Image (cartoon, rainbow, N blue to C red; front, side):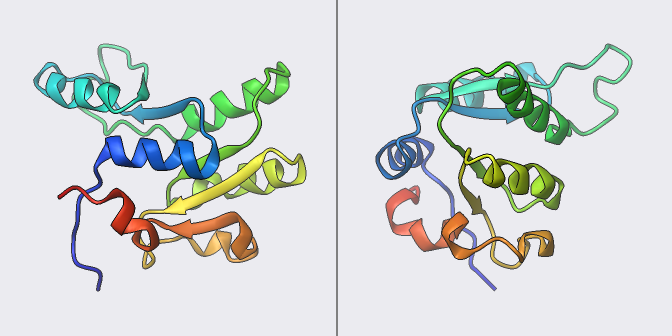
Length: 146
């Protein structure tokens, strides 16, 4: 078992820029909660663009903010509209993205998926080569909050 550790988002943003030349880094969040304002400001101050899931009033507070479809839709919309972007770097271990990752690799638009946890990286990614993935634990010394 990997001991818990925290990512320094500012260091992580610098890492993404230097290692993968990430110009725009999006941070998708489930829903807006006024009590988390400091967190949102710190994410933005670290250089990420915050994207909140849209909820109708009836859903607020009742459902976790599942952002998977928002992420997939945002990327596929950019492809469909032929908006210029080089490559996607995704941070997730969730298998929900595997079809999109496979497609982006085919299209030459995928750089890397960074798995937060070796234990919970979806088996759906087993067929992608090592070239397309890494684990955050492998770069821990560069991005850990101390």
